Figure 1 (tube, rainbow, N blue to C red):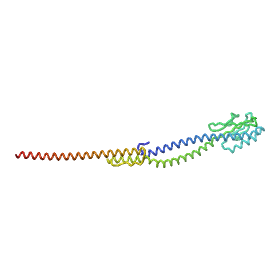
Figure 2: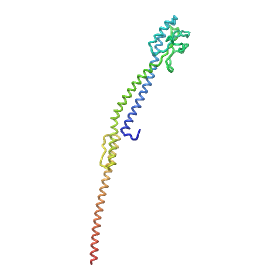
Figure 3: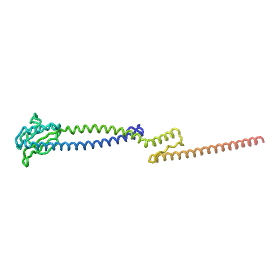
Figure 4: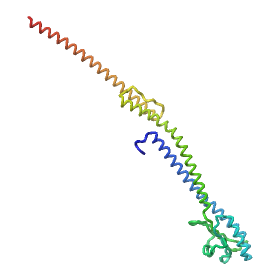
Length: 269
């Protein structure tokens, strides 16, 4: 912070910096919360979708109907975030896939552990397909994170607008509030400059606050009063001294004149 900045500018910089830090930490906490929440929401959606596909595809696996299984998986077209899906039979062999033209190279060769997990770019995992207590196979789903990114972009725009509006309000409020601190200090500085430039100790700084600045103003005015009294005493003492010197000088002049007359009289005799 530059030393050449006025007290008003420094106070406003402190207020704006404090407001900025508070806003940044608040937005950061908000984004962290939303990031965690968005991941949890997406995972719940994919888990629910996996349960629905698993329930609907049990009959297709039981009757070895590849067409029915493909039709069930094609319903995932309504879910834009699902990029790949597959249905495996109880032996772990690929039974159906989505999209239909996807290469098996991009799908797991056989079912892995049940559950859904995040990797670098996707949320993917397996859900078991059961018919009663019998294990019929497994469903694989792979979802991208576009929903999370879109949500973050939306929240980023909202947060940016909120920060800009908040800074504008903070600037106007700080401009008004800083006067309660800077005005008494500026008044004190103005009085001190008058005393320094004009050697006028009769001026007084107006006290408009009851805080530490008010105590400082009172102390400054008291100091000026003491200096004014001392100057008056010194001036009076100097005047008295000059008067006494003048009287003594007159006395000496009279004595000298008397001595001179006496000497002249003696010489005539």
